[in-house]
Amino acid sequence: MFDLTGKVAVVTGGNGGIGLGMAGALARAGATVVIAGRNAEKSSQAVADLKTQGWSADAIEADVTDEHQVARLFQEVMVRHGRLDILVNNAGSTVRKAPEALSLQEFLQVMDVNLTSTFLCCRAAHALMKVGGSGKIINIGSMLSLLGAPYAAAYGASKGGVVQFTRSIATAWAAHNIQCNAVLPGWIDTELTQGARQQVAGLYEKVLARTPAGRWGEPADLAGIAVFLASGASDFVTGTAIPVDGGYSIA
Image 1 (cartoon, rainbow, N blue to C red):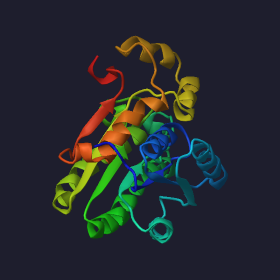
Image 2 (spheres, rainbow, N blue to C red):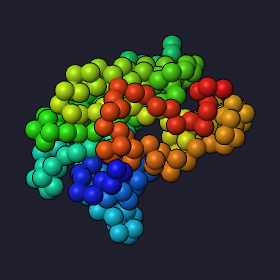
Image 3 (cartoon, helix red, strand yellow):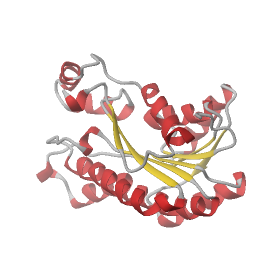
Image 4 (tube, rainbow, N blue to C red):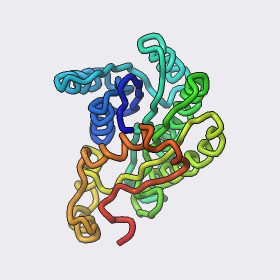
């Protein structure tokens, strides 16, 4: 039920943090994982790391905020691998400032990386999955899809948008046997959140105190949900937004 042998998965921003953790989980379950990102060197290293485990991995350089590069990305996936079964939209960015201090350029930059890229990749993937007769789309939201933070107005708006967009495409594409779900990671120890801890005083302790599990998460904590939502085990699950947060959102 959880076997992904023979499947092809694209993971945007899959060369580090949560994305690499999910890419590794999908590869371990049998999928061929294609890492898509702007940093070709970092992506190549991630692929090398996955291959040392005996897993199947590939990398394609692409800026997923650019419509033409997204089209080229999925064309190249089909040329190299002949199919697309799974898409994980993980590419993400933030600017930590008070809302009134954000420039328009900064706001739009965060929206483009987090939300526009999700739209572009989903649209491109849908055409291939519809022809293939099935597909799994996993969009990465955030705790800030649900909650507010004074230093994350653009990020929260974009990640809230990811959840609503996921619900919309789930209803639109269910008839094509394409399941679309969102994952809402809690406070996971990655480069992105390490930067947050440096900028937001007391963040580490506040998160620890609020999280019933009593710890920060690790990228490996996203492995199970990634495989579940990418596999046949979730064939009747669509339009959901599932927190993976150690209980942070319910405390």
